[in-house]
Length: 362
Image (cartoon, rainbow, N blue to C red; front, side, top):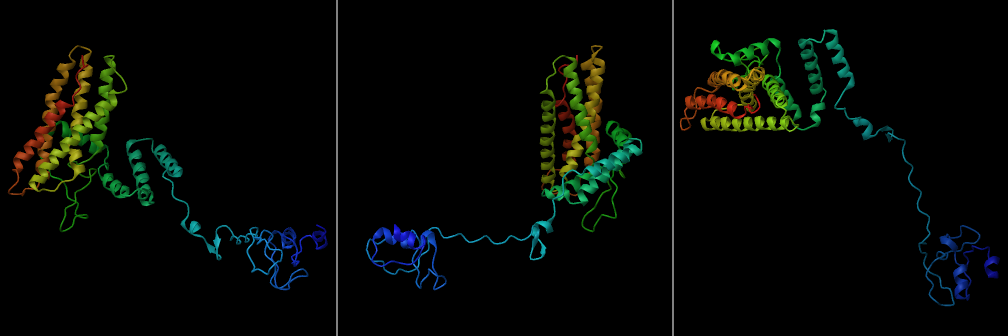
């Protein structure tokens, strides 16, 4: 032990002929490697680290330089300044933050614009159109694959105003008074191979989804009111009636689409959903009349009396609409065009009967 203190504690100079324990302490302790003549206590071919293997001999033999268990880890590389690599912006900075789905400034501007115009329907339509256009043009809708194209296609079916809604409702409820059922063509958007039609705001014979969707919501709420006045309301009424109507309409659209496929005639699914959705307007009228006359005990009579008119009107409306939107020339091997159009019209009468809710009218 005296040799240990005399050698400076951490000497790396080997002592030949020393015992096993002395050889261990006389090595370079704690992994300090000696370079070739770099210090006072270093010699060429310096000893191994402090925890090197001991061979059990009493004579220390020169061994090749080994890597110590306690070799200091290399210093970490200097990190560049945040946001800068090689003097330029990083990829994260170049990309920029993602655009949020909801823009409060646009919503505030839309509300202010509607308030400035007196909260009229035209003002709300105008400001809503601006918000949707901004939503599409700024690329937010492109974050979801296919949403941009779907919303641009769907936007045409909601391009309505008060004038169109009133005229369209009159045409659906009183179709026997009208003779012009041809749609207006949009020459600016038409091509030699395809024909484009004018939007609903310009043509009252165009298809829209505003009236069918609003009429469906109205009919569901009137059914809930009917159940409530009879003391039989529960929260399941709303989804039950909605599901029944929507599933029935989907099956109807599938059947109509199959008829067009058999005739090898083109058609749009959104057009079919629109054409088959106008019956909800008649159903709402039926339910409203049944509720009003239910207090007099004539609920069923009032409902079915109105049903005869609205169902006949919906069938005639479907007949004239499909007759003017089905190609004149169809496949020679498929079903006859006239029979298919009559079947489409009859489906309105059947589906309106099926989805009627008259259980608690009295």
